[in-house]
Image (tube, rainbow, N blue to C red):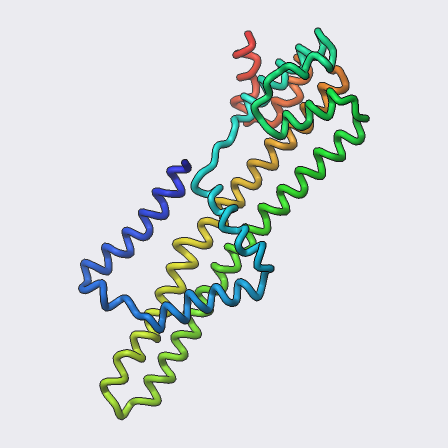
Length: 255
């Protein structure tokens, strides 16, 4: 569970709700026509922008913003060095009995153990990386689109409310509901965009970069193991994926 995302979302929504409650009745901020315009309009326009399957799939991608378990790069390097040591001692077939937890690393090692050509192994793993990043970027684009569309639908609701208000200036009872639509749709659109959709898009973008780095590290690891490189050389090579202050951590652990 990513506490930063959860606490940030809860904190933002709580701040909005508390400010509403302090200022008066919360029910005055509930407006069904405004919700229909913003929520319904945002969903409809998003469906126009993207295929249905991609839009629904974005909900699954969004879970990475809240539930995400990422292996540390230092742990991946440590396991890669261990695999390289076994390979140098027992040959590539010796890796077949090793329990590799990371699914992508396990896939790469299995390709190596099966005796595939290095170029084929690299093509398969590189394609996997590219497609994974592409799928993640689709989810990011959808949430960015929601962040763009929601305020626009809020503005449309505001214009509708103002038109209704101006058309009923001779009826004081009709002015209030029309003004509520005009103001609340802008509020709804801003909250959806700035407190939910855009922060989730930014967190997913961070996760995507992180996952890309980890997978490229693994690709480098598999390539080096297949070439039969010295484990210490592999450790030095892979340590470039770590921040400078952590680059010798795997060696210290191995010692």
